[in-house]
Each structure stands twice: as structure tokens, then as C-alpha cells.
Length: 308
Ligand SMILES: [Mn+2]
Image 1: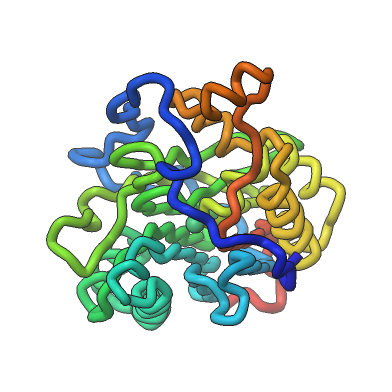
Image 2: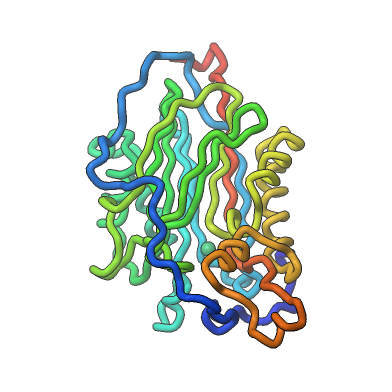
């Protein structure tokens, strides 16, 4: 799918769909971010855990030659640090390359992972990486940091996502933050954007054998949680699993008949096909072509001889 070139450029949603009923205003957020205590202390010390990680990125079909506008990094620091940023594509209309901000944000975050002030706190990492980023643009971003005792700390601004899988089930899921449909919260070079203070932050305890699946909205808009579960339990190795998830998202994204998570959400917000198509019994269907970034992290116990 990476090389597929027959696709036309994607027009903004407002030009593709027709609104048949007024938009619902702000969706209530599952994680009101402000005034929450940051992270609680781990309940107990367990054996030392870390991530075994596989990644895969497939650019938007129209952005293959420049590699797309998603960026990510993986660090082995402590139990492992995983991060994804998705450059907001609207900047291209202002002659700003949307990839620059997400790439610089990730480069800065990667360099700050060991910073003393960050102290394993992904929200502080967001603050410092954002402050250090000088490119014009904006991005949604998610950072997950695993401590060796199994505590996973997450900070997310916008609609990148994370799922935790245990025993064949999704036991944790982030919820997107948005201003309105298709306009997520975002860290920006401009004062109008969100900051680390707007981040959804949470902390959970992982155990050996858990798998986390992280990605840009290009994954979660095109692949259902049940499909993620079935791929993760069919493919044991993290690298082929990440590739299989990205490939599935990519094939759904360009399938105009597929009833994707994105299009189901669009219909629930009142978007629909034009009336003449409706009369013919047609409904709004299809995936959402986008950059697709997938990170699969499996929680493993460190071998005895590598323990300090
Ligand atoms: Mn995206």
C-alpha cells in the first residue's frame, strides 16, 4: 500500500461530507486533565520490567515521497519510553511543512528523556520538549514512560492513542481530546494552541505479558480494537505485529466501502452523503487516508544477568 499512487488528494472533510444535522458541541472528555493529581506512587516493587518494541510507519498515500508528517521515537531509558507526534496538516495551506514541528518536537523529547527535571514524568517532558521546539506548526502527541517496577505513565494532547491489552482484552484505552470533530487538541508554535497543562495524564500498573499498542489517529481511525486484539494474539513478535497493524490500517484507509471507526464517528456527529445519494440508499462509508504510525510494546521481565 505504501507505493499506491492512484489516489487523489484528500480534500478537507467539510468539502467531502454534508452536514445533515447540527454538530454536537464539545464531546465530554473521559479524562478531565486539570487539577488531577499527577501520578500516584507504585503500590509495590516487582521484578524489573521493560518493553520489547516493534514499530511501523506508513505515510499518507499522497505524502510517500516526503515520508509523511507523523514522527516518533523509542528509547530504552528506564523501562522504555515511547512517543508519537502527528503534525497537523492544515499548516501546508500556510506554506509551512507540517512535518517540521512534529519531527522537532520528537527530537527534543528524545533528547530530554534523561533530563533530571523531567524525572520520569511525561507531562514535564511534554512541557520541556514543546518549549525547546522552534519550528512553526502544531502536532498532537502522546508519550508513554515505563518504570522498571511496572508503572506506565502517559501524557497525551489530542488524538494519538494508546491501548493496553491483557489476556485477549483491551483493559485500557485513551480517549481523544478535541475542539470539534476532526480538530484535535494540539501543541502549537502559536499562542492559540494547547500546552502540557491540557494534557490527559494517567498512570497504570503493567505486568509481564501485557502489550501496549500506541499510534497516531491514522491507526485508530481505521482499525477497531477487536482487530488490534486479534492481530496481537495471532502474531507473537512485536515487529511483524506492528507491521500487520499498519498494513491493516492502510488497507482500510483507502477502502471506500469499509465502515471505519472514523466514518462511524462522523455519522454519529451528523455527517452524511448528499441527499440524492441518500435517496439511492447510500450511506457514508470509507476509511480515512492518513499517515499511520504504530508502536507495539510487550512488557517483558529483564533477564537475571542484566539486573543491577
Ligand atoms: Mn493523523
